[in-house]
Length: 334
Ligand code: NDP
Image 1 (cartoon, rainbow, N blue to C red):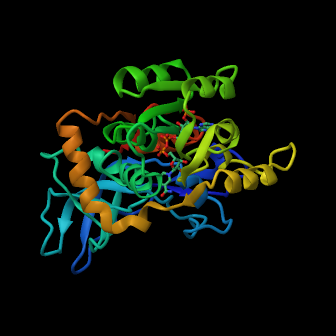
Image 2: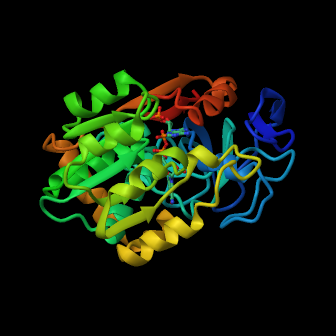
Image 3: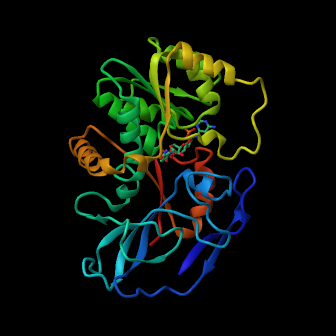
């Protein structure tokens, strides 16, 4: 059983020495348990948070323990009455080849219904994040403008496409011309803005002539600063992630922007609400049914960035925080 453990906590950007590849015996399933062989491993920005021991909504990974991750695994041995060898299950197996579970918190994945890796992306946690955050907090209305950054990733790409389905204008922010082209030409976004381009505030203002009614916050930092002056009265801001700051070690330089933000909250009556996808756990079935239907009828598209081999997970993860991925980042483990 190969596994990648947290060797040390990163300070700033994660580095190769923060990870260690180990070989341990394959665990054996006890009564009521199954042994899963990991087929697909999900790499997600939240893992940077788990590598740190700063206070958060979830406990950190212990030094020496496999890094947390959701996986799709194949049952290779079963002492569980409801699980047969050969079935595929989601699990929080972490970065490793094998995992023993009693199946609690797992879900069966039907490879005939959709490619198994989608259970980690568009039909899994990131997809549900987009769906629940946008519809419960963003609540886009017909004709409104919805802006989302990290827009070529699994969360952002679905936010924009659901905004379109609800009759809103979708504007995506992404890094580089290739991702921007993908948004407008393949996903049907109305406009795309490159946050690495020369004048982000100007380009975003040009893409949002009627201001911004919903800003789905994935990145923070310079993107949020460009969004703020464009927010319309009663704009809604689901705060989903702040990936531009995940590697930050200190407060960015410059003037204190908090008074300006609070003034905007007051005068524009902004609704800013943070959320974690599991806050909407009871909507999981509705989400999966509705998004699976949209995929089937061609209204939702998705893209995966597949990395081969568990040993390449650290490198791919380090790239994720810098936008080197293009689509949902998954590792084909075996
Ligand atoms: P992505 O696959 O989109 O990867 C993150 C992307 O962030 C990168 O590809 C990069 O895209 C972009 N990015 C990185 N640094 C910056 C920066 N400084 N400025 C602007 N963009 C940057 O990730 P996901 O779709 O999986 O996740 C998107 C967000 O949603 C993250 O913040 C994540 O933490 C959050 N999230 C929150 C959940 C919740 O429950 N609240 C659940 C799941 C995800 P680019 O090349 O376009 O810059």
